[in-house]
Image (cartoon, rainbow, N blue to C red; front, side):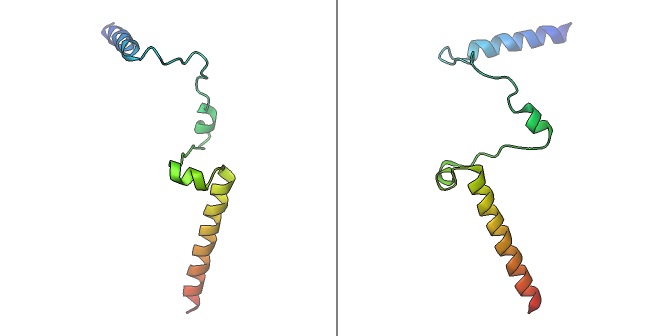
Amino acid sequence: MTRFKENSMKKKIDQEAMLHEYDFSGGTREKYAERYAKGNSMILPEPDLAAVFPTAEAVNDALRSIVKLAQQSVDKEMLL
């Protein structure tokens, strides 16, 4: 019974702390919950990187290129 009272107080405090300008009425709850549960995660690049890599495909292509170069470098070192 005490726990219920604590939770309801917390909700009241959180609502009072919310600025009136915020409007989440058009929001979607748990929009990415299914993806997250499957193990996919969203990574947000910082603004300077987002300017260079505007799409997920651009980021993936760049990372694959780096991995390929690193593997080639390791392969060359093994030949020496």
